[in-house]
Every structure is written in structure tokens, then in C-alpha cells.
Image (cartoon, rainbow, N blue to C red; front, side, top):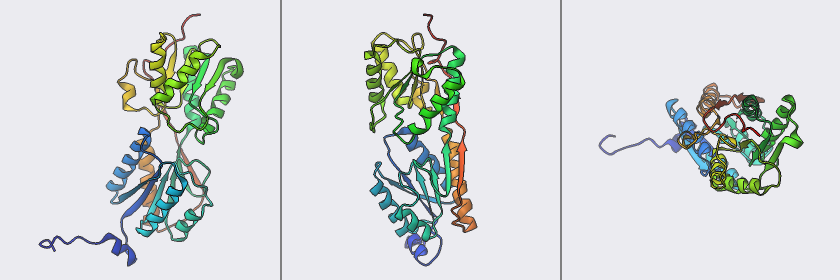
Length: 305
């Protein structure tokens, strides 16, 4: 076998009813650094547990997500992890996977699912941010890039309103929203565009900005600096995702850490647990991972009026 370079055929094993050691992993885009990190962490965790990740990228297209699921079934993947899935729980392709006996785990799905789900507690992250800024003395906020019509924005904007009421902050008088409905690329340029919208607004400048993610935050900071508005002297800024770049810019960015390593490690362990148990039980199970606030130099007490 060594002389001829023989390698076992994993797919043939699966066709004979044997175990392939393959777990299908489906995610939406590579443009998002935090999504790419989550996939890399999941692949590493599965590898350490003796499994191989078969990765499919869908480019935020439901039809491509369905095609990925069909590919996982044809490749005899033992289980499937869906990261940021756009599919509804009654989707025919998901039903076909379950009929074939494939354990499914959803990580941060866009809608409610019937099965194993692990998600970041996004409403809790808004509490952390507002408690921090309120404690510094801020009462006037701009919320950048959080679209209430976006599935993830739908978690964070209601939480913003809830915790403003808890802290007795007048939402109508003390907060403004800046976002472009349906915008798909949430990058540095988007942050610059939103900062431009804020600069053109006739209302007084807010003392703190809560951004959709770190890239939007950094883009906004750069545009405001060009306009002579410095962070945190004139305005404090908070991002989301705790990207590595946030610790290397000046000033370093205060941000929310999604605890991606904990999230993906738990997803991998749960998948292996289901595979070892030989169960496809789709009972409702939703576990929320608490994020952390990373405080750096981009937030400070508000300027004196």
C-alpha cells in the first residue's frame, strides 16, 4: 500500500454506510473578517476532534445555500453546520437533510429554527455598550449602520431602545440612526458614507457613536478626523467584532468581542456529541454566548458644552 501510494476513498466508505468523518460547513461571505474567522475556528475545532470540514461559500444567496446542502448530502457529510443561514426552518432542502439523518447545527441564523442553535447575545452587547457610554457621561448618541430591517439589526436596535429607556435616555431627542436600507457591504467606505450623512445633519453633533462593526467605526472615525472632529476628544466611538486592526489604529477602538472562539468550539463539540450519539433529534435548543466589552482609547468622557 505504501509503495503504490494507496489512500482510502472516504466517499466510497460513506456509500457503503461507513463513516466519512466529513462535516459540511456553509457560510455566507468572505468579505466579513469576523465570519471568515468563525469558519477558520470551526474548522480547527473539528480537526482537533477528528473531523474534516467541507466548506461551501454562498455569497448571501439562498439558492446557493440550498445547492451547498445538496452537495453535502451527495458527499455523504455526516453532519452540517450552517453559519448565518438565510433559510427558513421549513425549507424543503433542510427537510431533506433531516430525512437523510444529518444532524444540523445553526450558528447565528437569520430566523428562528427548529433544532440546535448557538448565537451571540446581540441584545446583551447593546446593554454593555450603553452602560459603558452612559457611565462616562454620554447622553447623545448616533447609531451607525444598524438597519432595523436587517435580521441582525432587528436584534440590536430594539435592545438600544430598551436600554435607553432603562437608563432614562430620551430616544427621540438624544439618538439618531444613520444607515442605508438594503446596503450589503458593511465596510470602511460605508462608515465614511454614514459619517458624511451625520456631518450633513442639521442637528447638534452627538457625543458618542455606536457602530454596526469595527470597519464601519474606523471608516467613520477617519472621515470625521478629516472634518476636524477627533476621537475621543470630540466624539467617542464603539465598534463591534474586536477585529485585530482595532487594537492597532490611533486611538485604539473600544469594541464588542463576540467570543468567536468559544462560540465555534461549542458548535464543534455539540456536532461531535450528536454524531457520537447517533441522534438527529431536532428538539429546540438555543444557547446564547455572552459577548465582552473591550474598552480602549476611543471612548472617554464627553466634551464640555
